[in-house]
Image (cartoon, rainbow, N blue to C red; front, side, top):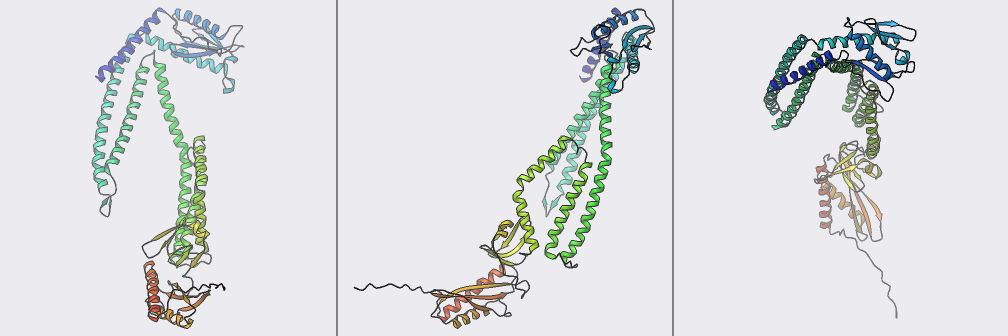
Length: 528
């Protein structure tokens, strides 16, 4: 069926060519001219080919009048049955185009675009060449032998076109089945800890769509070439075929020139990216040695080496991006610049809180207020620091609770650090507060608290725990037991504090000392 439809198409084209040839025999000059246009120009066309454009008024004659006169002269020259040779003759008023020695029309300086570098003589010679090609196409359209040869070539081109379409269908089926087999096997092997990570059917569907798009693109290209070939084989439609071919070649050349013009810029971008990567690797090597303790730098320590390395990498990447931006293809276009401005506006509006959190994280890191593994109290939150990120700090209480605190909140609250006494490495200071009435001697309370600390596993014997009277209130004395513990994990620290509290309760209970403080109220008796 496709072959029959194609044969019908080129048969209709051939019929149109024969009809047009018959019209040529009855009318010697079939110069189809466009009607006068609002701009005052008139197109002089022969055999669907534009030969010249009349733009100026000459000796009181409008461009349309000049066009009609040129058509009459052409009909008269063609009726003479001459060799149909176009020449150019220079005059004071401009350049004259002649056909077989008979004047046809005059090219004046007002008919050309002087700003584009055109001259009347160049335009006249170009019009003469176009006229000869148009007349040759006119003669060819009236030759039955040429039409038969063109029809035969169209049949061969149509058969080739049908074969290409069929081959593309087979290629699509073969590629689709091969993709399904290969991806189904390969992606099934991609796993992590015996868990398949990728779904093969999603990638198969995507590649099927890509294959379909490529096949349709090749079909459209084949159709475009086939139509331009058919139009180019007949004189009546040859100008259209030449236009289609020229447009395709121009587009291909434009794409090739754009790609070639982008290659130097891409090379510069690759060089900048390679140098930035080299600098990043060099900086990473230095910072990793500082982080591991192999290298000692005065302004940098192990805790700040990792964030400093990340900051340096970000700065290098931003600098490389700024340097390579002018060399990216399309960076100078309005669309590219509009997208970058929009992205920058969105980041500047929506990232204010992120910037604040990041700045707070940097302040905490570089002021060394907190370090990983330290036991701290921030506000009403108490626990071991398990992670310090750019935007948040994590505490683990040891009782199954992990507290996430924004860095800006940490920076705005008072922080108590129990791991900075410098006595026990990786240890912390723990304290117990009790209130006992004035009826119990303070030496007894001291002895009971020291006894509870000594009975608690995990409390260090050296330095020795000590007790201070923190406050002398109206009804009781506040005692504070301070002891050092060597525990370094959140769970162990929570257990040490729990056991210490238990031993304090047991010791005071065994000694008969009440931890509930008495309150006295004076009531004035009113005498009668």
